[in-house]
Each structure stands twice: as C-alpha cells, then as structure tokens.
Image 1 (cartoon, helix red, strand yellow):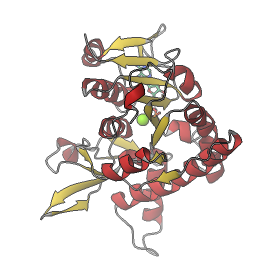
Image 2: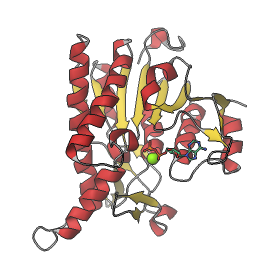
Image 3: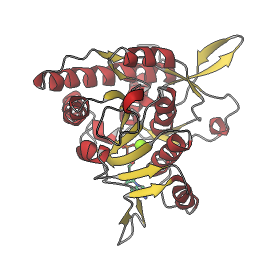
Length: 300
Ligand code: ADP
Ligand code: MG
C-alpha cells in the first residue's frame, strides 16, 4: 500500500486493481491465438501508462470465451482424452491469458524503461456450497457454442496473502483471472467445484483484499448509462453508491454484463475503497484522472 500518499486524488501513487473484460481481450468475437495476443497487446499499452505514472498495479481479467472453448474441446475430444472438470479449465485460462498479459506488459514496460517484476498467480476463490446459483446456471460462456454454468458469489480470495506479498514487494500481479478458481471447504480441506465466478464481483473482493485505493473496470463501452439500449442513453459520469443502488433496483443495467460491474463498484466503495470506475479500455488513464467513465464513490 501507499499510506503516505493515500487519498492524494490521482496525483500520487495509488494501488489500483484493473479488471479487463473478456471483450477487451478478444477482438471482434475472434478467440484465435493471434487475435487474443493482439488484444492483450492493445490492453497492456493502456495498463503500462498506469504503471509509468507510478501506480502499483494488480490486474484481473475475464475468461468467458476462452473457458467456453476449452469445455467444447473437452467434449469433442472426450473419446481420445479424458475430459477435465470446469475448475481445471478456469485454471488453464488463468495460465494462458496471464501469460499473454505478462508478455505484452513486459514489452510495453521495457519501451518505457521500467523493469518491474511480473507475476501471474493461480488464484483460488472460496464459494458457498449453499449458494442458490448452483440450482440456476446463469453465466453464459463460450462463443459459437454458448452455454450457461453456475456462477456463485465469491466469498474469499484464498490466495490473497501471496498477491499482497508480491505487490508489497513491487511486482505487478495478474490474479484471480476468470473470477478465480472456485473452491469449497469440505472435510477440513478445500476442493475445486464446477462453476465460473463473475470476474467483476471477484475483482471487487480482490481489490478490497489487497487494500487497493482504486478499482478500474475496463470494458467495451465508455461508461454505465441509464436508458441504455434506448434512443437516448444518458452516460453517468459520477454517482454515489446509494444512488447507484437505486438505479440497480430500477433494472437499469444488463444482467450478466453491466450489472455485475456496477454491483462490483458499489461493493468496493461500500467496503471502504476510495473510488471505482467503469470505462472503455482505451480510456484507462483518463478514467483514473476522473475525466472518463463512470466513477462511483461511497455515500448518498
Ligand atoms: P466485459 O467483457 O467487459 O465484461 P460485458 O459485455 O460483460 O463486457 O459488459 C459490457 C456491456 O454491457 C456493454 O457492451 C453493453 O452492451 C452492456 N450494458 C448493459 N447495460 C448497460 C448500461 N446500462 N450501460 C452501459 N452498458 C450496458
Ligand atoms: Mg462481462
């Protein structure tokens, strides 16, 4: 953390969690390796600017298209190779997407003569076996072959301590990719379960767990809006968490898309985080300065 500079309003160094949407990491519905690599390169140009400005940066990311493709591969190949469970697939996407991010970010930092250590952490997240989500699969994954899987609430970032130690030591950390690998407590231990946790909700939990000052959710629209999908959407530039909750209750935000983002922002600031911002991936640094996106602060 950066206690001396905390609350300095974006001029000094902050600890920032950046959450990257699956859309930001896959170009135009193309989940081919080249498209994914190029998307990661585009995204890391933006993230490198946050690092260059002196911020401590942790990154999380979605995995919807990628994990869906792995499941499909499993199915098609099941007579030749034993299928693996969904939690294994989530772990695989943390590794591959993390690898793309790490490599792209390293290059962007080198251009700026920054030699920070980079780490991609396999990150497990605790979920509740009694979560109603098990009975109502709601999370769409995959591309051509969309399907719904259970998406329980994230309860605890099990690998939090490792993330914090690396950040405290000056590393840039990619963590809790794809919403984290979902685990339940059982018989005095833990085991993986077949689900995909929402990456924005998990991001809010991670951001609080690492003591982040700011959370930035980068997606493919400029901000959250009211009247979205209508003729005259009104983009929200700044809003209190209480007012945001009223708009949530009024059904202004798309379930499974904008809703988890605004919910994540509300949770982060209600839990003590300074500000949370939803913005277009191309406007990350402007969003950090309060000049783009939807910024949420705690209060009425
Ligand atoms: P990501 O992959 O970044 O998580 P999502 O597709 O899940 O992106 O969420 C972003 C999408 O949310 C936007 O592209 C937009 O179509 C949709 N959306 C739904 N409701 C709203 C709203 N009220 N304001 C802005 N965008 C909205
Ligand atoms: Mg999403």
